[in-house]
Length: 451
Image (cartoon, rainbow, N blue to C red):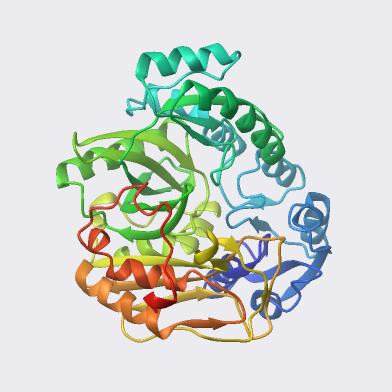
């Protein structure tokens, strides 16, 4: 049993982890940068340590300082949340060297799925369908040969990619020539790894993912699917569970494929296997596996009643899953809107400044995960997410009605946010009819008139 967990993150996910620890009667240690000392989880934790200046590289990514805080506080384990060190295999090994448990998968599993080219091979060997693609590119001519064979559009991806970085959609030989060098450069700047590969692009695809739970005894289950097709620049904006476009047969096939992919790498912990789904052909293809808790995990919690962060901690304490696949039931429908400090009218440009005032929504079927407070400053060092609003209803229609209400209740003063975009989407006929795909909302915003 863990007695004390260090939370190596900030914002709403740090607060979410702290709450799970409190329910498990585990003491918490917060780490924070010099500009984050007033965050709620820092104030609520049993202990707190400043680990560096505002820049993430000097604080939340400062491994010696974080390990030092864990040793000084005598923490049994470190929970990385998502982002920052959550998918860093070297950090996993350093934790192990210092006899600190890392709450997440082992280094081998993380490496197997963190390298996207290797992940494709692993999925294929496990019998999971993958899209046509190249190996890691040694020469540009391999990319041109692939594009000629399969036709445009194609997509360039960074092997160590994430968050849409090192990714380029290409529609012609001319674009491909320039995009290869641009993708390599961005990949190196973002991940210190310039390896890239090319994959056939599915246009009008749906992004469907399955939540995985796996204990250290080899028990692996999934907790159903999420539809994350409302995206912009490969960044998710709205997620929902369950998907309304896949049949029970396809859901079973995809769920079995997700479990097979996790088993293939001896995975343990919480993870997500992501697929692209072609509605026209009813075929699906492996996209990637995220070896951590996801931003959108609350929608799965709402429809299953399973506390994913609690289960994540329990499994790391060598406890077995206390549920099996037959005991997982999906109840109703859930939606999540990500509220970012971005200006939809300026191409979703970051909106920096101080939150002067705000009102969070409530009422039946509404959950809000947020860390903001009056005087909270949006700074350029961190992700722009300031809140997640989740609605739940007996069916999708009720979940939509409740989210529509929530978006009109909510306001934030002092910075621009994506609230107008979400208000627009709740009225959008395509979205309401489940006819959106991963490219549907590109270029759309939401304006003052929408309010």
